[in-house]
Length: 394
Image: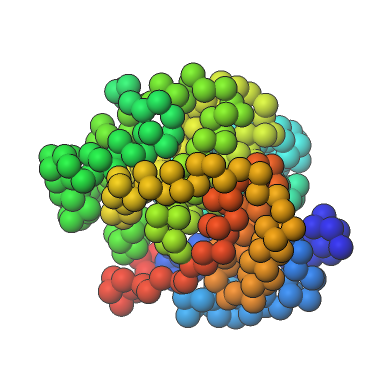
């Protein structure tokens, strides 16, 4: 059965709005991501429905999903920017974007609102952006409206104001230069460490982000605007679109292979796919350059905030190891990816089917062995920090 046919069979799950978009404070409700990813990697309807029911009753974090939270606020064309990032009025935002999707069509609403909302794509630890990409890929209007609402709800600005020009011939070269700075530039590393050691100093952060820990570190590093993390490399605008897309994908996959199974870096893969899907609905070269620029800054902010920058020697060796492994489309390679997909059907942690979905999609376009090797490196649900001993702030 095709992914499209399976998705139509479980369309009611994507329609479901009985649960809030988050639970236990700021943890993202990922269940619809799982529905789309499982369908995309060939899981049967029974597996998808069983996963949905089990996740709603008890997520891998040990908490159930929570009922929807209706808001009396009215969001309209005049005030939709007013509450960006304030983590409130989610259902009101859904109602507004439902109407906009109905008025403009799915692609039209995305083209109208995503360019501005993706300026805050690192909010909710990238999950709002992922929600949008998955919704657009599935061509589901209601989930698309939800995703635009979630981007507004969780908005955390990536960059603000003037930015310096960056270095690096291509994404991999830029990534290696970043790792060299992290390893050898004491002032740069101290600037980052000072921020992430005291996020309480950033009084503009929503209290729930500080309860998260991770989201507070990401937001605080973004606010600080450290040059090495937010500069704008020239390859963003000089590489042709197709070549830039391929090189960014490969660089981020090598970053994951340097830290296989890492929960944080995995999100850089799935969010990149989501942003690509959104860009494909607009066909705007200017917007593509802007979104890749935002992505590259956000990816560096996240890796630095979570200390996920590997040693430069390791990145170079991995790049060398996979440099000539093109043309990976063999019977054995197909079988390897099929095994990863079938393993992912069994996983409680929904990030794993998403990982396989994305990397198999990329491999089908570009049979580079790095994608296949990374697809089998599953992650585990992280332990929650001590701050979760405190009750949610909202």
